[in-house]
Image 1 (cartoon, rainbow, N blue to C red):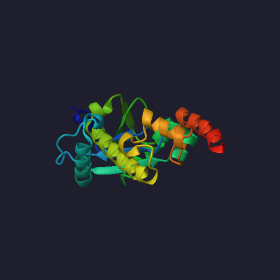
Image 2 (image 1 turned 45 degrees about the vertical axis):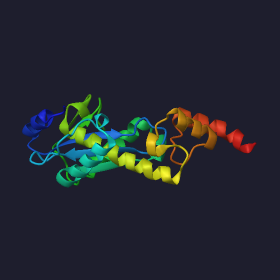
Image 3 (image 1 turned 30 degrees about the vertical axis):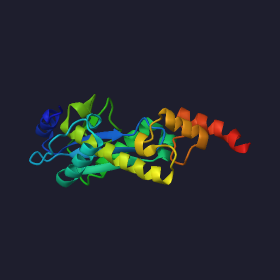
Image 4 (image 1 turned 135 degrees about the vertical axis):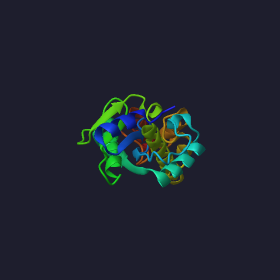
Length: 208
């Protein structure tokens, strides 16, 4: 289970708030990438925080609500257009930067899930598998995943047929079959190969 070891170390070194940052949505074929930054209150930490992938949707929803009530939380989003223009790596870094900025104050240190940090002015460290090690990163993973899942459910209502309420934009067989049958929507990432291929395949079919 993640704990506060990293946060405690850097709080002592820098004498200020330590934020954990994580993202959701790097791999899907559709929808934005969403990042969250969380500064936990040591005196008010919701029970059960863990890597979002180890939690059910119901637990993520409950924990997200509790975190919003007792922690400092910032959320950043990079759009599909930004993903296609910048590529998914740099769009993710942009979302993370926006998440930290939306905290409303500069943290003394930032812990980032993964193997690299954005190009920013914050003192920071990338922590591989940070969502399984650092409690604030795990909290950020929960907020980012829950927020993005909610966005994909809303988009599914606007663009039915692709199964986004269940697959959240990931490219399973049903989603890719829908892409070939219906073509891409404005929320599909055209820089991703399956979408680009579906777009090419869909054009001639639509013209016949």
